[in-house]
Amino acid sequence: MFHYFLVLVFLVPWTAIWITLVILGKLVNPSGYAAHACGRMWAWGILATSRIKLEIDGLENINKNSQYIFISNHTSAFDIPAIYWGLKNKMGMLAKKQLKYVPFFGWAMWAAGHFFVDRKNHKEALAVMDQVTAQLAEDKSHSLAIFVEGTRSLDGQLSHFKKGAFLVSLNTGIPIVPVVINGAFKAKGKKDHRIVATTIRLSILAPMNIEDYGLDSRQKYIDDARDLFVKHYEPPN
Image (cartoon, rainbow, N blue to C red; front, side):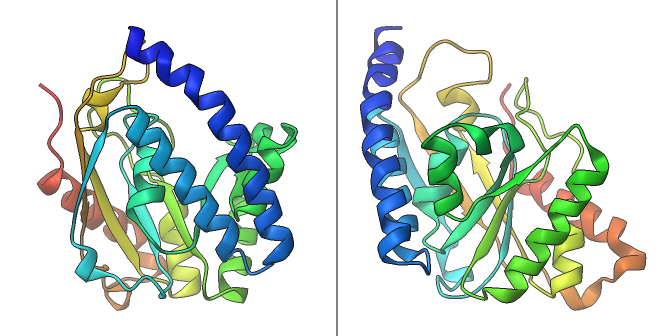
């Protein structure tokens, strides 16, 4: 419990520092590379202070300068810094629309290239995915990372995969890369008020062959991706 509160105390000033640097990074480097680098340093600090070690398998499957749609399972708040520090590709994540209006924090998320979506408004969410599609098509240096279940799992088990990432992939031709996260639920589950010093492992699988799928077979695309997670994910007992 002491460790948990220590991390919380550290989190506030650490985040404030890097929020400022992310915004400044966007101003001096509109391409977003500086802002992304600042975001990665924020993620490193969170993991280090929390005594979370990160192991990465499969980096040879991707090119840091190529464009992908990374999909991951989601069981812990540590999934975000793990993805951000573990993957070097300049990328944005999907975030709740409400965060966009948080002073400084929301501005930093925008500067870092994240995308905002209203999960309660299906029509608006689809419109946001159209915007994501357009932005990815315009900026080939920018990748997208999505927690494909939409929200954190309460029990650490895999849940239903949402279709948004797969529609964007099919509409842009950008391949999907499954990134399986193991160990994050042990570090801190959604309702836990403690942090366990442990190891989180990212398994970066080979990009899925988008030529095997089309809009009429998108459910197979989703099912095949989930099968890969079932094979490589180790749910908690």
